[in-house]
Each structure stands twice: as C-alpha cells, then as structure tokens.
Length: 153
Ligand SMILES: [Fe+2]
Image (tube, rainbow, N blue to C red; front, side, top):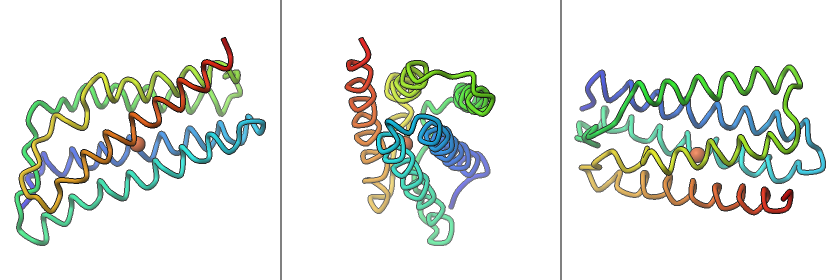
C-alpha cells in the first residue's frame, strides 16, 4: 500500500527527472556541438523516471515499498521550480553554453548534496535497487558535468 503522501513523493520525483530530461533536450538542440552529451543525459533521466514509477507497483501488490524518512517535499518543490525557471530561460535563449554546463552541474550536484535518494528507507527488497541505482547514476551525471566544465576553464 502507498499513502497519499507517498504517492505525492513518487509524483514529485518523477516530475523532477522528466523536467531534467526536458531541460537537457533543449540544451541538446541549442548547443549542437555538444548534442550527444545532453542527449545522453536526457535519455538517462527518462529512464530514471521509469524506475521511480516502479514504486507505484507497491500499491497493486500491497507491499510497503518505502518509508518517507526525512524526505522534504518543500525542498523538492523549490528544486522543481528552479528547473522550470531554467527551462523558461533556455526557451527564451537566455542561456549560454557555459551557463548550461554550470546549471547541469548545479542540478546534478544538488541532488547528491541533498541526499534526495537516500532519505528513503526502502522496506520491500523488491524495490531495494531503485534508489541505489538513482544515486549512483546521478553521481555519474555529476562526474560527466564536472568533466565537461573542466574543458571550459
Ligand atoms: Fe536522474
């Protein structure tokens, strides 16, 4: 079973991944010289949203998927608003290549620093891999963004 609050958490986490995918797709279009870099990130984010959606299966299967622990919905809402604001700026062509790399770095780093994926306690082992995978994938994204940034210093 999932509580309404848990469903809300899953929804926010999915939204976060889908918005990052959207932002990276815009960057892929706007900076064709680094198209593959952002397309790969965008593709990964879509995959992450699919993994998160697997938590909904707990509802049908009557499993206790996770405990919400220290999850902070208002922090996540602020994070989501920041991505939305950045998408609007990118759509208005207000973002340079260097800024785009810097935003990518900030967004990925913030997920790690705020421990977004480790605030949960996964209870049913069926779901155990999901948060671990999300965390390690986000660390990989952070590293990619850092390497890209290093080329611009
Ligand atoms: Fe992600």
